[in-house]
Image 1 (tube, rainbow, N blue to C red):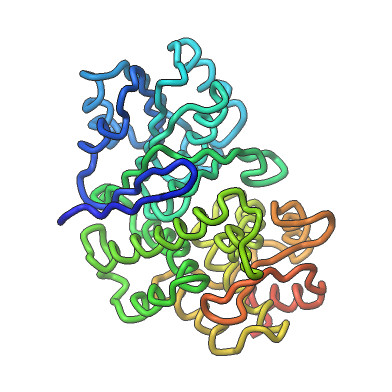
Image 2: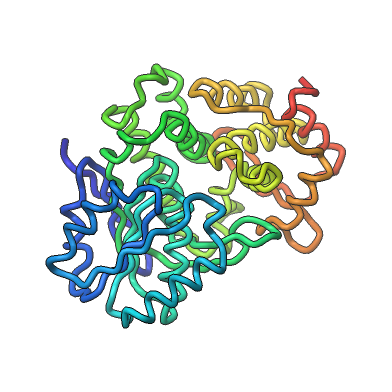
Length: 365
């Protein structure tokens, strides 16, 4: 099957390539680099080795295994990588390549953004979640004890290779989790995604499925369209939330992730968070019952959770208050007035948030 090239035409243009067996595209993206640091999820050594092997004849390659998952996105890990880059004599004309899921992409992108105030980075995402979310758009970040991605930088990649063949080794529950971000894009910008999900047998969504490929390409296109217009999340035109729209459901999702010690996968938390804000918008009178219900059915159809009761409302409220979208003491949520009609809801009353929490836990339905 042919490759699909999705151009990102912002201030620093690059291409997102979607297809199968794309490792051969990497040298073209690397260009004149002399040194390449391959930062890979340490549990994916066997998968990463062919990438390293394809580079060693043309470049000085530094391969660095990173701790997997959100727990690896720590300042100590960043410092270790900085020291390794320094020892290798890494310069501004050299390139970082990331190989792994969303956490590896966030971490590796941040390392590239901060070394010498920014060196090129190319992402090879290995999970559905990282293909449609972390690898595109230039957001990088690490976690602190206070919360997720609170330290970071905007640093657009020089290219992204979404090799769908890598999804063949992905556990089914990880693939399903990635669909959380895909379905989110359907609600905020491209309802055709919802139609595809609702018309397709979820078990047929595999690495070689034409429908999964279309879902991936549609979700990436949504992100590209938003990011090109609002890279640094300053807001869109005519009241549109701009890049913040991509955080639909994320205020609650990040709170759930933190409260669970990151035991709840990001895509799972996003599904639950989207159900939460849909209920919040319904109670505010801006979203009708049918669209709120469609949130529950669309996410549940592919096997994603739509309820969670692992923390009290007060615990989650405390976590939401340090969300990056907050302004001072005021919480702000991305909500919908209808499909593909997002807006910001600032400072909803606590009783409405508590009632939406009750629905999220299954107690208020």
